[in-house]
Image (cartoon, rainbow, N blue to C red; front, side):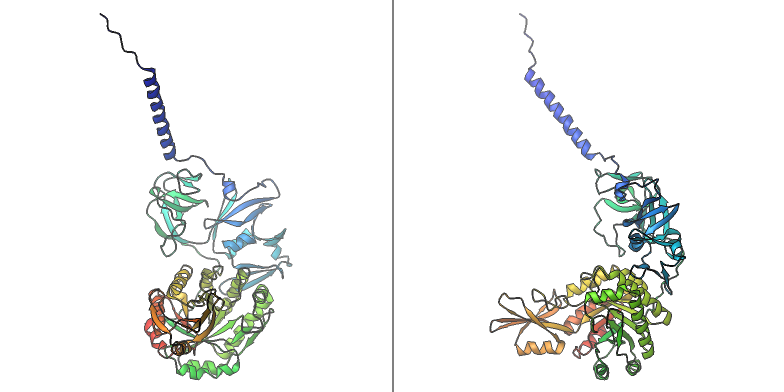
Length: 572
């Protein structure tokens, strides 16, 4: 008897084929996800060249400065390259300044200020206005700028290098620079083994910046493309210092061979000068005093002076240098608009500088301290130009130049890096954390606030040029129910008396580095974050550990007698 052969089930076959197709699909999906993208981004789009003007009288080129694409561009006109003022200010050479009101181009070097009028035929050879934008000749910029420029095509661009000290790495295997950190991101350019790149995701202090992504390195290629490379394709990162010669000379600075202990002395009239003797007798350890003698009085740059040669002589006899303060809020003007008008006028800047230098030298003082607190983001560029121009006169006359700034968190737009180059010292005022108009009661200068102020400043300014200013005052806050609190500024002795008068409870707040006092009387809550020997000691520890150049105090006469030993010990 024959056995019947068992037939294969069509259902089983279909299921098997379905599984096979699914496995192949999954494998293809996994393979596709793990395969790097080979798509290249359009570099014209990347560099912001939205419309080609090749073949016309003026050809547009992108400008890349130290790896960053500038908002400003360049043009080629009859074969010559011209750089827009926007790009020049962005980093090609920000020491070229344009006064559009007076049609002047001003160049500052370490020791010289050169002024060019656009009305002069000679100036037209290197500066011209196209539309509403000033353009500077590339050939002129090369003779007055500390930079290197290389021109590239496809797309047309100028790549500038002005930072000759950086973190570098060598490419160890062929790789791609991608727009974002990920193998699926579009490729910007390809790199061959042996090429060198600049590492952009490491800060000057060695810390990581916000471009750091695990497994990837944010780099700039020699042809100006900035993007992400897989870390495994790079060799060891090293510090590179390129040898080069600057055509403009070196910015020299005065540097004291001791830690600075600077006390601000508020003197808004000549009578206040007579009080210096008594205040100095109660203090110790001060080696620099900064009287507020010079005041911007109008937007034309008129400066009122209370400078006093006898005061300077007495300070010198006590072993103190005198750095005269020029501010923009104790004179007849006290608005951001007035300050902006004065700073943006070449004539007004000249007026301020001429008066300040004359008054300081006539009194026999040792330096100038600039305390402009009405500078907005819009006037920041003109303020920096004022500092550059003033620094020339100070450098040529051997005067110390220092600049006061509130903490970077409040004034990010002030270019402290440039301040630290052209000036001798940069003072960070680590106070007014909570001002009289604050929505809630709080400290004037808590320890975290001061710590952050120091850290942020040192990202831009060398420690040996950084002075940290601390307050000798605080605020007594009073709050009724849920109302907005009111406050009264008070010196250390007044604050101490308030604690006793209101019989306030005092406890040490280790996080804030301060004694916190509080009580409630007749439905009113009183609070005060004390500035005293303990809080000052905590701040001095931060200043010392950061290696800063010294400390400044606002202001002389608001301290208790025990503070000076704390400061001296903190500086030692």
